[in-house]
Image 1: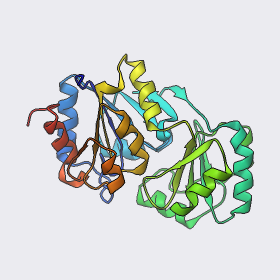
Image 2 (image 1 turned 180 degrees about the vertical axis):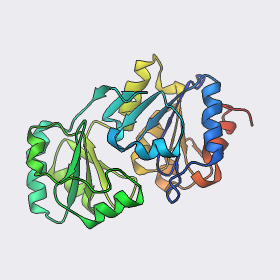
Image 3 (image 1 turned 90 degrees about the horizontal axis):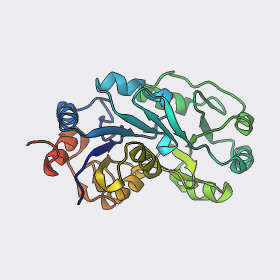
Length: 267
């Protein structure tokens, strides 16, 4: 196996505890020691660039780059983008038609520099408050805007059993999840693994030279693609099955444990 020279981290449930929205002290020590060992450290998240305030509040740490919106937007350490892949233009009219036929579904549309919902929802407001997101309430716009403004990801507030019918009705996209409340809708050929590949290529590295940490269904692709895929102990069984190694839960120092186990930092 090639020496590990880079690490990718999901945020919620991996770096940050779901309830406290804070990192364990051992997680911060592990990041510092991996950086001191010369490793490149990256975020790989479903969050959009405008949603990273909570991470900055919780982690006083500068990452070397960010794979965002589940791989659709890649930025450098200063959040300057170098790769963007929007939802296919041909899928947007089908998406808008599907939303017309399912008025109970709220969608958050993420563009490069802004985002909006197709209608007001107490459910969305509650998610924003729970994750301390800013702004605490999303702006509302007519989703027809997506016909003329590239959209990189949707958060579709619908139950998991609607994911497959949605994808069948809107070819060119797929639904990935890290929670049961909403699905992340991204291009069918996109995902965190694709974003990782773009980020590694920028630094002249390969997939077998990286380790990836995650806990959600949207992390499974990157766990399989990485040289070493690590599932957190709080991950669902399917996510754990996609990994090479299952570490302790996020609140029990799982990042530290795995980094020591693989010899990335001293024990």
